[in-house]
Length: 457
Ligand code: SF4
Image (cartoon, rainbow, N blue to C red):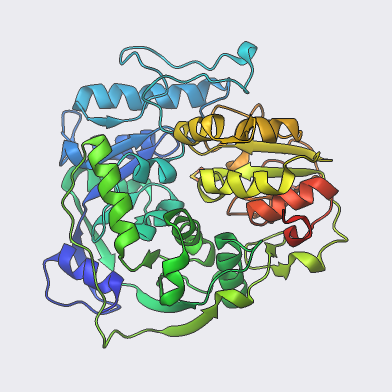
């Protein structure tokens, strides 16, 4: 069995499953957020009754992160609906924007969207917050009401996005009927060259198979090249499995996985026990590919989908209006570090926005010093508009007052985010070019799509 088959077999209580089998799977964790949480709760109450209780309080995680720092009253209300439900169900894992469990959330537009407007429990973007808060464990099954739930496959778990109806059912029963996906195998070999990042790996792969090339399939990443990838790198790659239509992306378990998971479960007092999944020697794949990491170059996915692969060095004619670093794909500390290496001591020439994924990342950027400046100060000095209000921000467009949103037609943005379908970051006629934080940094310095190797320190 492949990694995915092994986890699903275990979760279904079976010795073996094969691709195409329909099995009832026990969930280890269910995550929902402010966009889909209210709908999920509505389905749960409609189907299980107004007084129903969730199947397991310890296995439900609720993370407001999407439309948070906005004066839009409907968006603010969604967070309040989550808080009411958490209080009613007495759920332990709710990462609220405010500290008062009986309060109401209202974003203060007068204070502006650059400076912190959240309390001590807030955790930021769900896919980055789940591992940081100790909710991702090898060998487990994670369902989330968000397509990029596949990010947690970096930790050797089966993680996939589900809709509100399925999530309402999981909330009530802890189970879901799943068809076991076929597995595509990506064997990574070699090491990345300077200026090339994990984002380039996944953009290369999606360009190879197309933005629907892995539809309802597992994407398994293994091989000797994985050892050189950090957990942040693996998260970037697994995160974008859905951009090829994948059901999930998954990595093998290794010492680096163990170190991260054990540190985070200990720090947060979450469940520490886990059982990693190993694949069999006779595992069967529907597709096999070997990716030599040393041959990859800075890569860009052009408008209008993540499969429109080009090399950054071929796109110098494309003039940009804006640059953006952020999201569950490109808003991690390591992403900002690589971005800062490029722009340090220089000035961006187009509007450039930086949105860390979580408050912990904000803290790291504001306390890590390079010489006499913190990374945060280096970015601000270079002209980057940084916000302390960690969250999804303009990755998903959002309400019109969202930080970094593309509100005008015909804007072209180079972005470290993960999705570039028309209208994704705001105006439906704007265009998004997906790239690594290093490529975003170099492009912000020139106003054109630029290979970051021209600016390596
Ligand atoms: S950062 Fe973007 S891709 Fe990630 S969960 Fe938020 S909206 Fe979705």
